[in-house]
Image 1 (tube, rainbow, N blue to C red):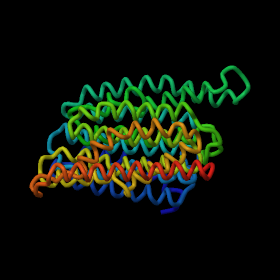
Image 2: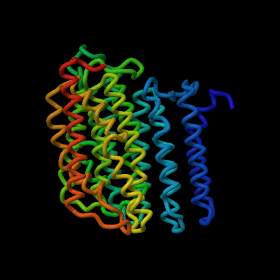
Image 3: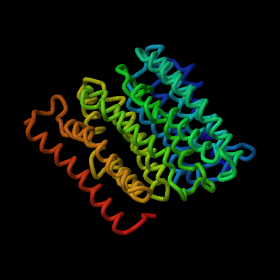
Image 4: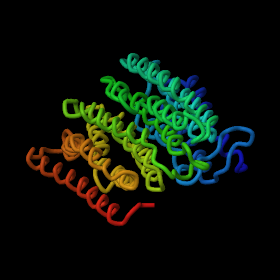
Length: 414
């Protein structure tokens, strides 16, 4: 296969897989989904390594560190297929096929080099996410909520992209308006901001519903990180609207955590990761982009695990424990949080306070869950679990204090 064909193959494969799964017998649907998603993931990884673009189209591998985002939706898809139980019901089979389409749409939107084309593609991804949720048993209302959320975001984002392209900065009274509309619109599509709990807190949450916000957020953060840049490599000025969207998301997702059940709390934790990625993308600089990539990689890895954790079986409990432990240092989300804090200190050190305070309640509850013992694995004293949870939170916040102090003492982190 020639290298110029890698990107077209990676973008088209998930939609071909969607068609194959729709006609696949129920007995072999799961095996086919795992194999097809693995091939798509391999094509996306090869395309990201090779770079380049698709001639005559607005599709191009994201530049610099952002190229890591290209295979993330397909990595999430492969994990969800590998962890999902055998699909026998028609609704579950339909949701699986639509999830392949959702992953393909997210990959296409991530590969859009043109800002306006990417904005329109992200809207299509959000509509497909609503369809995937609506076909899941008990989640039709959540799907309709996501559809309305996406529509309202696109109505803001598309005019924002047009204004941003048509009106250069500093030339009229519309200066800055395009960036604000685009950031708010795309953030709304991804579930950032006040509408995040509507999407993330649904009671009946199957794997497609758990993956939808993650897959939608991947192309959104790729484009938010590239607004106002040359080829999307790095930002010279922070995007305060994007950073405020991220912080608002963290607060609005963390507030209901203390009263939420264990299942809802860990699904809401995905919203915290997406909000942190928005803060990193808005802060800009190399640390900000690296933080966005690391946090979205965390969400892509944790999404299927959290979605598969609803099972009451021992295997489901082990997956649940694995997902919770991955939020503790020194795993990937901890590194992404560290990079985010460095980016925030580079842009505005005063934002570090509200960001850390917003994380404390969720970290305490997540830490308690992380050190809990799965069913059938023996009992542990509650006091011991509480001490381990407190230690995990102390390590997390202590590491953040050290990084903030180093950033303030050493100047901007680049």
